Length: 309
Image 1 (tube, rainbow, N blue to C red):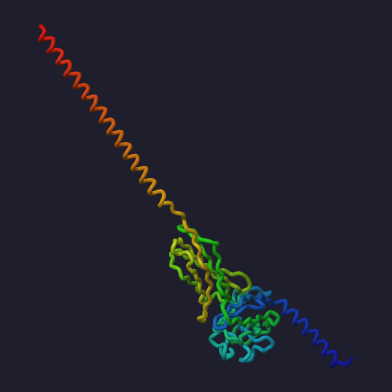
Image 2 (image 1 turned 90 degrees about the horizontal axis):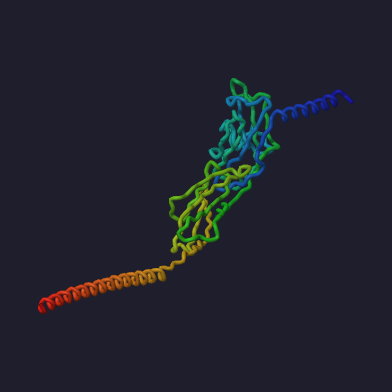
């Protein structure tokens, strides 16, 4: 084997070793695939680590570029620390949300277009203290890239509610919708007026978020067969909605029976009391008359005795 061949083999072995060392030093966690609503926005979760610990933010230069493309060329970067190196149709649409000093490389893309599918890869470079020249400490995460799944129609809200409502009792309906842009969450609105409305935002998994709106109200008899609609408004202007027909169980009313019965019983009681009162009065009157007759008879008897004497 000649010297030139040995030299080439040595270079290849050295390159493999260097690449292995570099790979061990830099690691990234990037979601592989994520839905993106055309016209809206998407947030790509990303984090990275370095065996040297947290790196100084002032010395970090970051970029997101097309997979397999060199990031040094302007047309290949969708984001770059140097704004002049960002591809024209991505200028003003991409932003790093994460704190680089905390190893957060999360990326936001707004005004999603149907050709923004990627895949996109993250690259980080450690530059010199003075100037902006990169050091040998740099890495492109070509094996940890994200691909955007273009969605033209927004997700429809999901409604969760009991089968039926009961007149006069609290009734709760939950409207939820999935999205991938926590920086511009969807707005959920109802075709129902209420003072009791609660909204939640929570991370489900891998960049997928859920927005919930909880509606609580007291249904009335007139609300039976009324449609209840929840509408989701997304960043960019698109909307979607879901609805259902409310079934209200009426509370049975026995007023048509109770009221006449109460009136009848009340009348009977009053009549009974009146009769008892009149009977007592009549008895008292008879007793008075009897007493009067007895007194008069006694007087007549005394007068009769006096006349005989």
